[in-house]
Image (tube, rainbow, N blue to C red; front, side, top):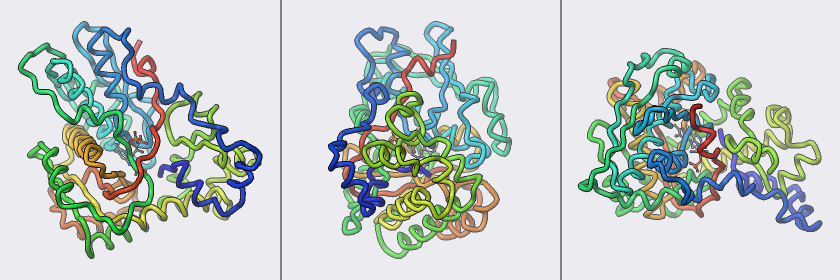
Length: 390
Ligand SMILES: Cc1cc2nc3c(=O)[nH]c(=O)nc-3n(C[C@H](O)[C@H](O)[C@H](O)COP(=O)(O)O)c2cc1C
C-alpha cells in the first residue's frame, strides 16, 4: 500500500493540526527536496552516452512501491545489461518477484521510447542467460540479467507521441470523480496505445462490475493492512519528512506541514502506523479506503501463462497505457493487492478471477483504477548514478 501526502492530509484535516501548521507559518515547511525530483528534469546536456540518456528516462518508470529495483551494467560498449537489484525485492507482498519484473518492463518500454526519440532502435534480448521459473522465490530473479539491450542508430525508426508524456505520467492515488466514468473516446485511445497482441487488455467503464471490483479491492486492502507482516513491508518503505526523502529518494514519500507536525509530535512513526488504534494507522486505512471507494472505472491486463518474459512484457504494455492516459488527461492507479500471491489472498483472488471471467490459462498481471482527478506531484527518484553497476 502506498500513501500520498495529499490524501493523508485530507484524512487528518479534522484534527486541527493542519490549521496549526498554517497558523505558525509552516505551510511551506517540509517540501519535497529538489534533489529527490531532479531526475524528472531529464538528462543534463553533459550526458553524451546514448545509453545514459535513455536510462535517464527509463528510471522514471512506474514500479512497485517505488522501490526502483533496477541495476544497469554499462561495461560493454554499446550495450546495457539490465539486472534486478538484489537489495530491492518485496518478499512478503511480491513473493515470486512478479511485480518487480513488471517494473523492469515499464523501464524497458520508456528506454525504448527514449531511444526512438533520438533515432536509435533497441534490440532487447530478454533473459539472455535463461529465466527462473515463475514459481521460484523472488531472489531467483537476481543474478542473471533480465535483458541485454543494444542501441543501434537507425534513421527508419519511428518516434512515438507517448515519449512526450514521460515527464507528466503519474500513478494517481487519489479519489476519482464518481460522476465521470472513463469516457468511450478515452477508452478507445488507451486501447489504441496497447499494441501487444499477446496481452489481453480489458476495461470496465461503469455499472455493476465496477461496484463489485471496488468491493473486492476494499476487502483486499483491509486484509493486507490487517496482516502485520504485509503492512510492515510497505511501512518500512515509508520516507517521513524531507530529510528522509532526500537521504532515500524512493519508497513512499510522506512530507509537508502535516507530516512535519505528526513526526515532531512522535505520532507518525513506522511503529505507530503499524499499530491499530493510532492516528497514523487509522489515517492510512481511511485514506486507502477513501480512494478505493471512489473508483468509477477499472482496467486490467492479462498474459497467457505467467512466464518471466510475459511479466516483463506486461510492464511494457502497462506503461504504454499509462502514458496514453496521461496524454488524454485520464488518471490511472495500480491496485495490486488482489493479484498478490500470498496465502491470505487466495480466496479474494479466486473471487476476482471469477468476476472477471479470467480463463485458467491466463494471469492477470496488473489491475488499475481509471477515472479523473487532479494530477499528483512527482514521486522521488534516485539519480542515474545509483543505478549503475560499478
Ligand atoms: C507492478 C506494479 C504494482 C503496483 N502496485 C501498486 C499498488 O498496489 N498500490 C499503489 O498505490 N501503487 C502501486 N503501483 C504504483 C507505484 O506505487 C508507483 O509507480 C510508484 O510509487 C512511483 O510513482 P509514479 O508512478 O507516480 O511515478 C504499482 C506499480 C507497479 C509497476
